[in-house]
Length: 375
Image (cartoon, rainbow, N blue to C red; front, side):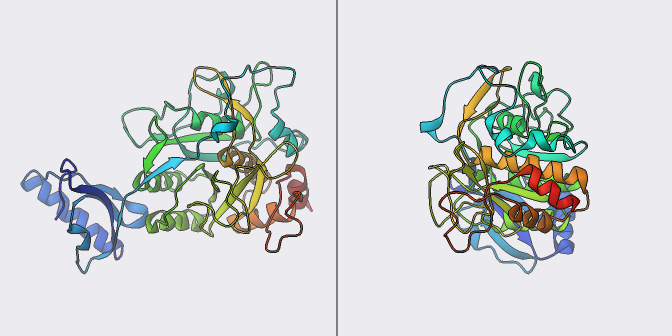
C-alpha cells in the first residue's frame, strides 16, 4: 500500500484518517509490522490532523479504506520572497536614521513601549530558521525545532526567517535595530530549506509543534495558490487553542485573490503598505485582506550579523505579529477573533481603500489598539 519515495513514479501524499481512533490503530499496526519485517516506506505521523505523510506510488491515490477519510498530494510551498525589483543588497545597520526602522516607527510601536514591549509572549515563526549569532536577536530566541533534521538546531541557511524575526523582536538599540515587540520571545520553527521551500506536511508539523508548545502567535510569511485541507485543519486546531495565526497575502499585486493560508477565515491576512501609507504596488489587496502593515523596503536582521532591506507581504506580516505580542502582554486572554476585530477597528485608513465596499481594515496602529484594550 505504501511505497518508498525512491521510485520515480512516487509522490508525497497526506493520508487523513476518519478519527483519532482510526489514526491510532494504524500507527499501532504499522509499528508491529515494522518489528516483524523491514518496511521500506517512511511515514511521518501528523497528530494534530490525525494523518500521516508518506510516498504513494502512482495509482495508489485512489486508495479506499473505511479508516481513510481523505488523501491529498503533499505539495511544495514557498516563503513569500522579496519582490525582486525592490530587493537591495546588505545595508549598514546605521545610516542617517536611528535604530528604529521606518515601519516600526510608522505603526507607532515606540510610543506603545511606554506601556508594553511584549514581554513573555511566545511567537512561533514557521520559516527558514534563525541566525542564533546575530547580536540584535540575542536574548530573544528560545527553544525551537528543525523539522528538516531534528538533530540540528533550526539555524537559518536562507535569511528570510532571520529577517522576519528581527522585525518582530530585534532588541539592539545601541548598535543595531529594534523590532516591534523587543521583549517578545521568538521560537524558530525551521520547515523551509535553504531555497525557501517546504512541503505542506512540514508546515502542518510546525503548527503542531507550536500548539503543543503553547505559542501565543504563529507567524506564517509564505503562501501557495492551492487550498490544502491538511493546512486548513491544522490552522483550525491552532485557532481553537486560542493561538493568533498571521499570514502574508502574496506579492503578485492581485486585486481579488490572495494566497493560502492567508485566505483561511481563521487566519489574520496581511497586505503591505509603503512609507507613504499607500498599498505597496506588489501587494495583493482587496476584501480578502484583514489588515495592512509596512512591507516596502524594510530593513531587518540578516545572516552573518548583517542587515538586509527587503520588500514583501512577508515583511508586513511580521509587523502585525509584533503588535499582537504587545496586545497580549497587556491582556493575555484575548481570543484570535477579538485580536483581529480590535486591530481592524483601530487601524488607520489607507488612500484608495476608503471608497471600496467590503474593506475590513487599514494599516495597523499600535497606540490606538492598546488604548482600545485599556478602555
